[in-house]
Length: 462
Image 1 (cartoon, one colour):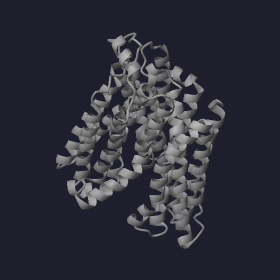
Image 2 (spheres, helix red, strand yellow; image 1 turned 45 degrees about the vertical axis):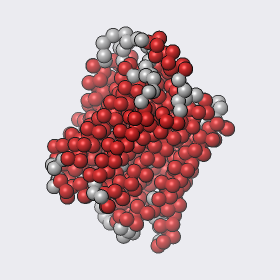
Image 3 (cartoon, rainbow, N blue to C red; image 1 turned 60 degrees about the horizontal axis):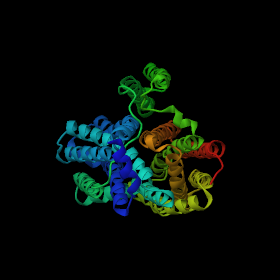
Image 4 (tube, rainbow, N blue to C red; image 1 turned 90 degrees about the horizontal axis):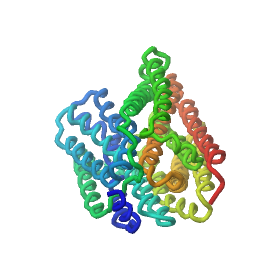
């Protein structure tokens, strides 16, 4: 069977139909992940949920995807990237259906968890399919469209979800998610299976999996609940200790396990290492959005609707400049566009941090800052993703993609937690401007660290 799969893989070339199917599968993630953030009050009122239950449901998706994405990437390598994509689409259909028919908290939380597992299967599998079936400039073009679905999908689905929820009702967002999943599955029909050549050298790494899940679950609780529990409370400190000890033991176990699902030899490749670190840091800059959106409402008195209008520039520019990043990659290599993107994003955030400026001039700076933020991320996206997947061997594409996407999830979660913690603590006295300035400058620091990781880790080559 292995030789047959190899033969098919050699002769099959990715086409536009496959690419559209991959982009649709990636968009399903944002339809259920991002849109719920805009619809949360409607969902809470309709289902009669407490704020705590709603918070669990919102975070269940990112928690499930963040914990299992590396596992799913490894499974995609072993059992097939097409298979795991279909598993992800099926899980999304079931999870979305649970949300469409739910009348209470149980199906709501179960549906959200299933959608998180769906994302864990889809994201690394589709990245690995791009690496397998597209080469050279065609791969870079395919990665641009994958990035449009992945990076640009957050803004698009946020607006789309809000429009659907306000006109048809929040449940219809998940009806559309089911339809997109079905269309994606139909477009993927006929794609040859892509599996790793490497033979399994032993039993599945259950010990490593358990250690990883416990460590990541503890880390997610610390990140999301640390502020509420108190950063120096015994519970928080105990969970932090579990994270440190758990990850240390996990690394030791994985290094000795010949069948580990996380291959630490991947990080010996400086291109992959630098792309993953900078990806983590630029996703941590997501804290910008929660700080600035909170500040313009609390400190400047804007409505949620007007706040959303300020970020339209971000949505438009990130969608446009992703293809520009691809062209720069082809002309001057990956390293310079990655540095350029991080610098532009940092400049945009710095403009938003000028909270001492009064009136509409400041709101103009926020609009411009959001636009530059989108330009920076758009230019960075494709060169970074191409560097990550081009730097690893074909047989490890799934697990490598899983680690790269896990860096996105963890970076975003940590960035939001750190930024919002500083903003909230400094704003307690009513000085929202100081809280916003400090919270935003932390994100500028993340951009600077990302620039450093690209300059000093990624090799100089086109």
